[in-house]
Amino acid sequence: MLKRTAMLSARNEKKRMKKTSVSSGILNEISQENSRQHIDLLDKLNQNGLQHQIPTPKCVVIGDQSSGKSSTLENLSGLELPKGTGTVTKAALELELRSPNQIEREGITIWIQPCPGEPIPSNVPLHGNPERIAENIVSKTIEGLTEKLIANNSVKFSKHTIVLRVVREGLTDMTLIDLPGMIRLGDGPEKTLVDNLILHYIRQEEVIIIPVVPCNVDLDTSACLNLALEHDPSGERTIVTLTKVDLIDKGAEHKWLNVLERGYHKVKNIIGWYVVKNRSQQQVTNELSLQDLQEEEIKFFATTKPWDELKNRKSLGIKALASALSSLQMERIKKFLPTIKEKIKEKLKSTKEELKEFGDDVPQEKGAQLGKCLDIISDLCKDIKLIFDDNKDKKVWQIIHEEFKTLQNKIYETKNEAGTEDYKNALKQKN
Image (cartoon, helix red, strand yellow):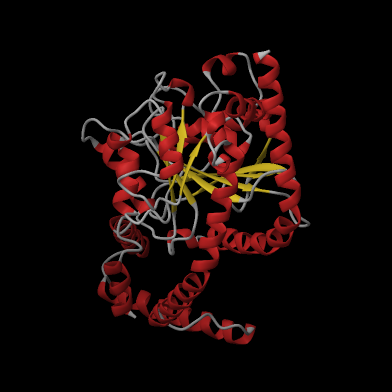
């Protein structure tokens, strides 16, 4: 009898969700086209290096090690991602989840978005030449690229970003950043790098912060939640994701229900609380697909007490979380696009002024280009004549060899300075 009641309850829950989905489908189709245009625009800007110059809206996932971050991202993307005990994520992973459109067909591509000023291996794919991969090797490919990025690092983390673009029917358009798990103990270089990487993202007012908190810990002592509240005290850009609901002590579930319905006493205005049920270790062992997992999740929340009593059903499950994240990201893109546009204009203006200080542009016409080359050759000949005049007792090859070595040494001396403000100012003064 109980089993039959549970099955009916789960079936009714699925019908309710399907009905809601159909009734809102037309409205979604109307808004999706405009929203996709906004996110495609940001994609183009980011792929040309904008994100290293100007912050853009994205969803940043933070949490303690083994908090359920990777499993939640798997559930959102429908892909197998690297996971395990301890620190698995050793470089920021950017997940660009997109539904197909007229321009872009289904598929998965991966590349490295370099961090300015950081050395990068020569044998990794970059945006100009991304690697197209099959779904069954996503995890292995990410692990392989991570190993290449950290191979020569003293600290086994990388400042570069691995970008995974997934275009598939049924995906909710959003951009997620998975960061290394927070290291609580110690104060070594690895902890410093991870802390700085997390702070780099969550300090940006454009960013949506997603603290992932397992339900077997105390909210008051959650490091990722406290960090989010420190940098977003109003809670207007924080969406908390609760995981590991199957590990809640028996009888303690109502504490979490209270949080979902009434919020958190420290910050009442957090924009959203969501609870998801990711794959258990047994389900992983049994190779339960991520598609079947969503069916299991719906059934769990519809038939398991006290979750089946929750009035606000919009806080339950991965689909609800995906919808909330996508909607909030689109809102923030629309909000910040005018600001981003102004910042680009300012950056373009200052860059043009900088370029002017480096001398004249290369002429466009062939005749003028030839004249410019002749001027350069003439100046070079004058410099060579001065060198010979000052070294009349030496053979020509000796003079050239000495000058070459001097030039080579000067170039090597400035390899760490190139690109700095002092270096640019020195160049300007010489011109």
